[in-house]
Amino acid sequence: MAAREKEGTAEHAVAYAVGVDIVLIRRFDEANFAAWDKLFTPAEQAYATAQARPAESYAGIFAAKEACIKTLPSPWAGNIRDIELAHEADGRPFLSFYGAVAEKIATLNAHIDISVAHDGDYAIAYAARRPEELEES
Image: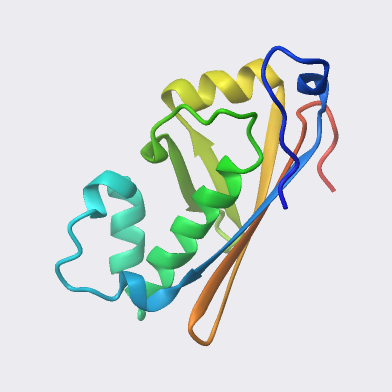
């Protein structure tokens, strides 16, 4: 269960939070899936469609976005496309933020680490929000 905060309360000062999401890959295996443009940025779509198993990539990206959302204070108010999953040259995933989500992350002075995995029928993502000033290991 994700650590949750409520805006305007003493709990809002919590600096750490985690979120996890698991997705059934075949949900993203539809050739005419109507929500691509509502859920994924053009860069995410280009990445996923270039992979050997696009549905697996889409499921992992979606799980990452959902896990990230679970690290943010309630209530969630943003556009899921304002969270973008990309990859370092070595393949490690990272998140970029835009719009209201970027503003919220800046207000929290936070960084969100992400991990994504696929196995069998499922993709899973784990997100950890930490204070921005902590050094990365």
